[in-house]
Amino acid sequence: MAISQLEQAMATLRLSLAEMRNKEDQMDALVNQFQTQLRRLPRQVVYGQTSLEMSLTAMGEIEERLDDAVANRRRLLAIKDTATQELEALQLLKRVDEARSKLADLKKGIPADENVQVEIRQLESFIAANSRQAEQAITERFRERTNGDWALS
Image (cartoon, rainbow, N blue to C red):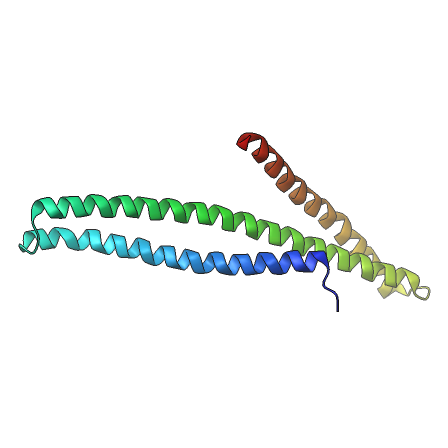
């Protein structure tokens, strides 16, 4: 059974999103670790477990790492949002394609009764509305990519 390009693209995006969720969990754990370290260090100074100078230096380094981790997480979420939007657009495209196929089958059939006519009208309405939505989403992504290429040049 051959997998269509659309199915392949959706599968690739799903795998990428799973990887991104895993990376997001790792980044959340790292952010929490740095925040915990920043909360604990002042107590170590107060109770004489470490010197003030060492604690200040360590806190500065931890804050830098925390800021970097937060920035990386923000960038990851931007990528994840884009991938999610792409997947949603492809899923919509697939539903429109399936509706078109079903509509063609219904129109090929025997002269239709009222229920089939209602279903045909519903499918035509679905296709019209969602084709525009999918087209807009895909066009918007294309513009973002091409404008982004200009910005990177």
